[in-house]
Length: 79
Image: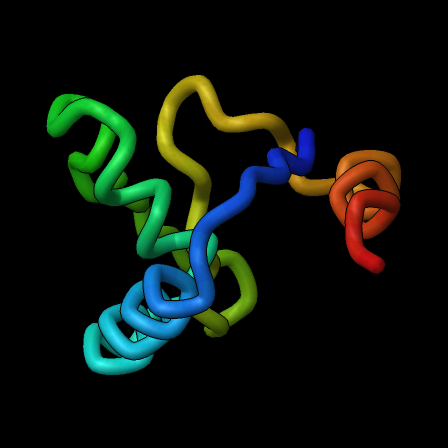
């Protein structure tokens, strides 16, 4: 993932944080939802399957496979 940085006034930052908190989501997710087109906001449908009695959720078609390499790549972006 890429990190975007931009400047806002103190009042704007406080307003964005308040609205994100009121929505129960992170500031990043709040900004994503406001900035990206509605077509990209559709919830993904997950397939449920059972292998050993435990429910397993498969990613939506087109998602990257979740494995050690993809998790390491995702975690590399965290501070």
